[in-house]
Image (tube, rainbow, N blue to C red; front, side, top):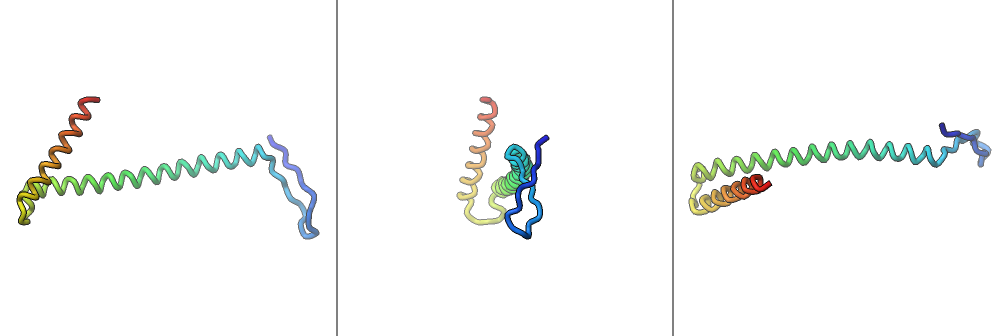
Length: 100
Protein backbone atom coordinates (compact mmCIF):
# COMPACT_ATOMS: atom_id res chain seq x y z
CA UNK A 1 0.00 0.00 0.00
CA UNK A 2 1.08 3.53 -0.61
CA UNK A 3 1.89 5.87 2.18
CA UNK A 4 -0.06 9.08 2.65
CA UNK A 5 1.81 11.80 4.49
CA UNK A 6 0.50 15.11 5.75
CA UNK A 7 2.24 18.19 4.37
CA UNK A 8 3.12 21.42 6.11
CA UNK A 9 0.29 23.96 6.07
CA UNK A 10 1.06 26.83 3.70
CA UNK A 11 -1.63 29.18 4.98
CA UNK A 12 -2.90 29.77 8.49
CA UNK A 13 -6.47 28.72 7.53
CA UNK A 14 -5.39 25.35 6.14
CA UNK A 15 -5.23 22.75 8.88
CA UNK A 16 -3.97 19.59 7.20
CA UNK A 17 -3.43 18.45 3.61
CA UNK A 18 -2.72 14.99 2.32
CA UNK A 19 -0.23 14.49 -0.50
CA UNK A 20 -0.90 11.66 -2.88
CA UNK A 21 2.09 9.64 -4.08
CA UNK A 22 2.73 9.82 -7.81
CA UNK A 23 2.27 6.06 -8.30
CA UNK A 24 -1.19 6.17 -6.70
CA UNK A 25 -2.14 9.22 -8.80
CA UNK A 26 -1.07 7.40 -11.99
CA UNK A 27 -3.02 4.31 -10.94
CA UNK A 28 -6.19 6.36 -10.33
CA UNK A 29 -5.76 8.19 -13.66
CA UNK A 30 -5.26 4.91 -15.55
CA UNK A 31 -8.39 3.36 -14.04
CA UNK A 32 -10.40 6.49 -14.84
CA UNK A 33 -9.24 6.57 -18.46
CA UNK A 34 -9.93 2.86 -18.88
CA UNK A 35 -13.43 3.24 -17.43
CA UNK A 36 -14.29 6.23 -19.59
CA UNK A 37 -12.76 4.64 -22.68
CA UNK A 38 -15.02 1.62 -22.37
CA UNK A 39 -18.03 3.90 -21.94
CA UNK A 40 -17.10 5.96 -24.98
CA UNK A 41 -16.56 2.82 -27.06
CA UNK A 42 -19.96 1.54 -25.97
CA UNK A 43 -21.67 4.79 -26.92
CA UNK A 44 -19.80 4.96 -30.23
CA UNK A 45 -20.76 1.39 -31.10
CA UNK A 46 -24.40 2.19 -30.30
CA UNK A 47 -24.34 5.19 -32.62
CA UNK A 48 -22.70 3.17 -35.40
CA UNK A 49 -25.29 0.41 -35.06
CA UNK A 50 -28.13 2.94 -35.13
CA UNK A 51 -26.75 4.55 -38.29
CA UNK A 52 -26.28 1.15 -39.92
CA UNK A 53 -29.88 0.29 -39.10
CA UNK A 54 -31.16 3.53 -40.62
CA UNK A 55 -29.08 3.04 -43.77
CA UNK A 56 -30.36 -0.52 -44.15
CA UNK A 57 -33.95 0.69 -43.87
CA UNK A 58 -33.34 3.40 -46.46
CA UNK A 59 -31.71 0.87 -48.78
CA UNK A 60 -34.53 -1.62 -48.43
CA UNK A 61 -37.07 1.12 -49.15
CA UNK A 62 -35.10 2.11 -52.26
CA UNK A 63 -35.04 -1.51 -53.43
CA UNK A 64 -38.78 -1.92 -52.87
CA UNK A 65 -39.51 1.36 -54.61
CA UNK A 66 -37.28 0.44 -57.56
CA UNK A 67 -38.86 -3.00 -57.79
CA UNK A 68 -42.35 -1.52 -57.92
CA UNK A 69 -41.35 0.73 -60.79
CA UNK A 70 -40.84 3.98 -58.95
CA UNK A 71 -43.81 3.82 -56.61
CA UNK A 72 -46.06 5.77 -58.98
CA UNK A 73 -43.45 8.37 -59.86
CA UNK A 74 -42.66 9.37 -63.39
CA UNK A 75 -39.17 8.83 -64.76
CA UNK A 76 -38.90 5.08 -65.22
CA UNK A 77 -35.43 5.38 -66.76
CA UNK A 78 -34.08 6.97 -63.58
CA UNK A 79 -35.63 4.16 -61.54
CA UNK A 80 -34.02 1.56 -63.79
CA UNK A 81 -30.60 3.13 -63.27
CA UNK A 82 -31.12 3.16 -59.50
CA UNK A 83 -32.20 -0.48 -59.55
CA UNK A 84 -29.15 -1.45 -61.61
CA UNK A 85 -26.86 0.30 -59.12
CA UNK A 86 -28.46 -1.54 -56.20
CA UNK A 87 -28.13 -4.92 -57.91
CA UNK A 88 -24.54 -4.20 -58.97
CA UNK A 89 -23.60 -3.18 -55.39
CA UNK A 90 -25.23 -6.30 -53.94
CA UNK A 91 -23.45 -8.50 -56.48
CA UNK A 92 -20.08 -6.94 -55.61
CA UNK A 93 -20.63 -7.55 -51.89
CA UNK A 94 -21.59 -11.18 -52.54
CA UNK A 95 -18.46 -11.75 -54.62
CA UNK A 96 -16.30 -10.17 -51.92
CA UNK A 97 -17.73 -12.54 -49.29
CA UNK A 98 -17.13 -15.57 -51.50
CA UNK A 99 -13.53 -14.48 -52.11
CA UNK A 100 -12.84 -14.41 -48.36
